[in-house]
Length: 141
Image (cartoon, rainbow, N blue to C red; front, side):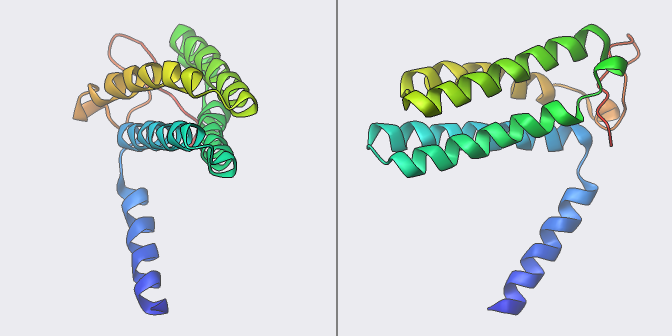
């Protein structure tokens, strides 16, 4: 079983190294959505520890996105993303503390909108740090 896990890990590492910046961010949003849905279900089922674990995972995703956001290069878009990530992190912490599935439900459409916006970035800009119109997509690498 160890060899199978090693191959799986190697495949995952290679996949992440070759995925575009856009697709990586989309995957992070998808992961956050998945974790928050799982947290919401756990809250509804009174599985407090599972709710906490999944909220922590979602929070970690947005903390990483915030930490890697290059606000200076991003201009207004970078500032708006920073503020949105701070809001999401704060709201996830609040929902986790209160075990508030309704609050989590209010966050999901926001994250879905972010994911959908990133999915619409054309392939030719999926790896670049700014678009021809000057709107930055820059993240520290």
